[in-house]
Structures are given as structure tokens and as C-alpha cells.
Amino acid sequence: YGMDEKAITELKKRGKFFEETPFYAPADGTVSMLNVRKGAYVNEGGSVLKLQDFSRLWVNADVPVKDVQFLAVGTPATVTVPETGESYETTVDFIHPVNDPQSRTVAVRLILDNPDGTLKPDTYVDAVFNAAVQSRLAVPEEAVLYGGVGAYVIESAGDGYFRPVMVKTGITADGLTEIKSGLKHGQRIVTSGQFMLDAESNLRGGFSSMDHNMDNMEMEHGHE
Image (cartoon, rainbow, N blue to C red; front, side, top):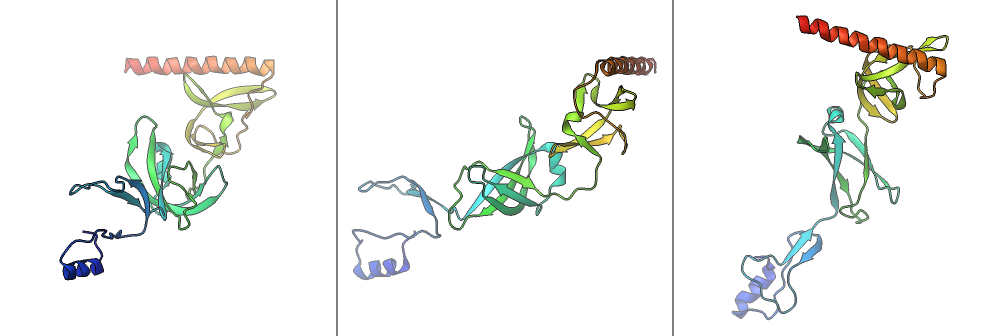
């Protein structure tokens, strides 16, 4: 197996084995593992070498579970090598059907053409997906705070007063966090953690009121 047809024909003519018999790989590639040395014996069925084709490489991107919904096979993506700054355009080839419970990510496979062998296996890369998404209400990521009652933002009530507003968040990307509910377009919110003392006092009052309302809701639920 693996002998060239010409070598087989010559072997039949001679009726005896060659001292050295050439074997040819069925495809182009690079020897990544060599299991024999000159003079070594090879057992039947044994592995002599490992041949790999590096002209095309797989990129396994770990995508957060909440973001996979925006991807599909064929979604455009840009892969960048941080060390060199080189970028490559490609598309999503496969989305793994099972997520990793520890990292809370899903493996998304991309394929890169590598005809000149510039890219090396096991190289760390960054992947940006150009997913088409509809217009969404979003606020600066730092404007969303998290506490025991959930996610909230601080709304400016005017005259130096502020109040917490509960929100439901979605995806976060490029420094922006999607707001699914709790805010409307045009509402003024605080995007900095620096408050005047009187504003901070009013803020604490707002939290007390919010906690009180939450307790009342839980009590009413318990009577049902």
C-alpha cells in the first residue's frame, strides 16, 4: 500500500524486493510527526509518520452563549493575529450544537486559507463577527450597575436629583449594553459614577423606596 504503480511494475519484472522502495503520500502536506528512523523495523499496521495539510486551517472561536443567536453558517467574520496585526476575511463554517458549561461559550468554526503557510497551527487569534442585527436601544456599558435587585441605571430627574431605574439587559459589545426594557429613547441617564453629595443622598432614598416596593411585592405574592 502506498507504492507507486511504476515501482510495482518494476517489482513484478524483477521478481524480488528492492533494497530501497519509494512510497508516495496520497496528498500534499507537511510531516508533523515521524515515528521511524533509518534502520528501524516497521510492523504491519504501524504508523510511520503523520502528514498534515496546513494550506487551510480551522479557527475555533469561543463565542458567549448569549451571542450565538446572532450567528449562522455563512456569517462574515474577520480574524486578526494580535502579534502581527494581519487580518483575514472568512465566514462561519460550523456552529457546535453544545455549549461549554464552564466557560459558557459555544465553539464556532472558521476556515482560513493558508496557501503560503504564513499562519501556524495553535496561534492565538481574535475573531470579529459581522452579524446583521436590528436597531436596538443601548447605553454605555459603564452606565449599567448591578445590585441585589438586579441591573439598573441611574436616571436624571432634574435639579440635581437622581433615581434608580430597573432595566433588563441584552448583549454587550463595543462598549455598549443593550436595554431590552425599563428605558425609553430620550430618557437622560448618568454614565459616570461621580455624584454630588446631595445627589447621592437622593439616590440612597431612591434605593430605599425601590427595596420597600420589592418587599411589598413579595409579601403580596405570598398571600396568593
